[in-house]
Length: 418
Image (cartoon, rainbow, N blue to C red; front, side, top):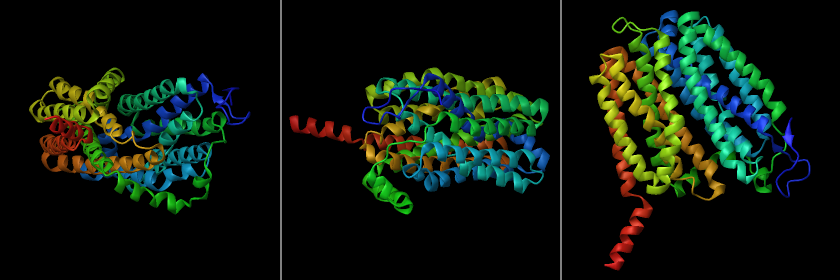
């Protein structure tokens, strides 16, 4: 492992900071392990055609993947408080590798679904790497390091959707999973070489049983119920995102539109704008408050979703709503996390667990519903379903503004002054 020789004060002489090279390699690992869930987006029609699956049946692939991911987060992420991040990240990366191999070589649709489901259940590494890195960089480099890892996540999603569409169109959909499995194999071998076995853990954490760690999520959520509201909104937002893009993958490659899977991938390149817009609007959230900004971006998203069916006849006109949705989509997640990550450090991981579980449950249901509705009512049905989800999200965002404790406090102070 190539790391700086100095470590956190009081951590012991053998505790080493991550070098810049290691941080770059962890960023690459974040990109690879995150990308696996998004390869299906541009090639969904190709996979369905090869297996003879209907739109509702092919929708089970991303749906089970997302729900299994939620279950994996709930059952496996607490192990990070008992075992080293290095060991867990390596084991779960190997699990993703096995899942990718099963999908790449599946000759039966049920095996393909099983591989995707196992892949989702094993996708814990993206949530372990930021926690690991945050403990192994000096405070003055923490923000830069987290930004690097986040860039890796965004890049992984972008490359998966653009590159997956291109590979699928010209070399067949299995080539996508051959390449993805090879990348996962490389990451599985890489992580043990750049991650340190040591990590600081308190005695209370070591003594707490696994079941106790998992079940402790519930009383923490009861004391901080707003995380359920934020998680529900992120689940709706993620559901809209997956329903629209999976439906788009079926719609654009249908005889009605006549485009290839590579076109779906090229459209996904719109997400590149998030690299520039998300940090800007994140600073705006610091100034006006996350709940107010979330209500605004929910309104913008709703406006974009309203145009999906209206502009659905033209690929070029679809760029307008897709661009609006791409700009504001990540901000629902950013502002949602801000509403509970200001709580005491000892409860943040468990609040994050509840939030992520709700997010992927919403994503799983949105994946299946989006493709099932497309099978019955076509693109207009998918657009209408996305509109209903987006409207619900907007209503909840407005309710959250009304319930904002800072807003209530301000009004109480104004009444007292009056």
